[in-house]
Image (tube, rainbow, N blue to C red; front, top):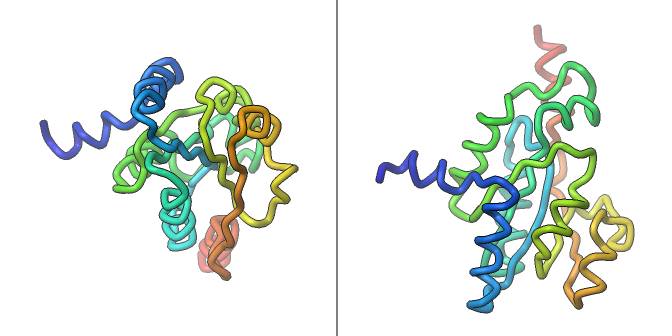
Length: 164
């Protein structure tokens, strides 16, 4: 098996991910879930995701599809297509699974996967995070992580536009 095969093996459909999560749960793995577009990956993303992984033993990344990103960010986004974004994210050693979601929020994906910990950036109040009710009902945790100041995909896109 090549390194690329291992990376591609982390990208799973929702049903495949559910099956894997069931197996992890049987061995008492602590399952962390976070989500996002991750259009242009930067230092802030790496910091955030590594800290998310520290919240448990397995990290699942819910990744917005291209259609979902366009609805959220506008017709010029994403800059990087969903398959490329998924491969890039799956190549990070601290991400165990990448699962696409096409909805505007990952609510249905969180409901299907039933993680133990839900993580988002500190620009959210924990109780406002999509899936908060699911985690609270099962006795899970919802946590926030501070961002690295000065790093955002939107600011990088603007910088590129103004330098052209």
